[in-house]
Image (tube, rainbow, N blue to C red; front, side):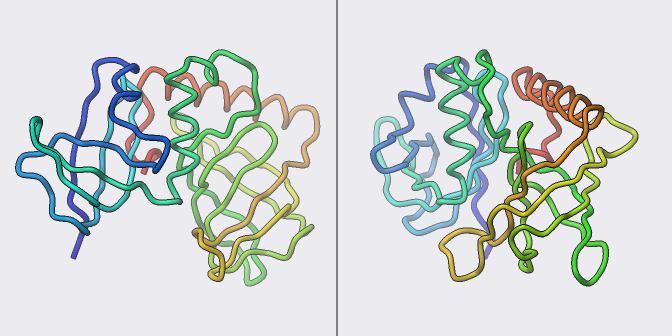
Length: 210
C-alpha cells in the first residue's frame, strides 16, 4: 500500500515553528478527514516558497482544527535541519558549510563499472550517495553530477570518507569528500551557490526535492 500524499502550504516561515515539535520530530498537518494511525505519509511542503518532500508515519489525530500528527523518519533529518536553519534565516545567509538536502543524479565509478544513483545531500566539501554497495573507505571515486539547468554534469573526484550499510538504521550509502583542483573547486562552489538560490526562491525542480 502506497503512502498517503498530503500537501501543506505555509504562507510564512514562522508558521513552521508552530506545527513542528523538535522534541519528538513530529509535525501537525491539517487534514480532512484525518489519516489513520500507522499510515505512511508523504508530505509535500511549501514553506514560504521553499519546497520539500517529507516522509513519515501518522501517529495521532487532532480536532479543531482537524488534522494528523506525523512522526518524521530518521532519513528526513538533514532536510529538517536545513529547513530549521532556513526558517531561522541563518543557513542561507551565513557562509556555513551547510548540506543542501537535494536529490541530484550521479554516475560514478563502481567496482562493477559505471553506476547511477542519487545524492542525499551536497555542499562544497562533499556529498552523500545512496547505494546498496558502497565502495571501501578511502577509495578514490570519479563522479558526474547532473545539476538542474546545466547542459553538462559536474565532473568531480573524491574519496570515500564513511559508509552506511543495511545493518545501520539509515538508508545505505557512502559519504564522499571532494578532492578537487582549483578550477573544479571554483565550478563546484558556483554551482552550490546557484542551487541554494534556487532553493530559496522555490524554483528547484520537484524531482530534486524528493
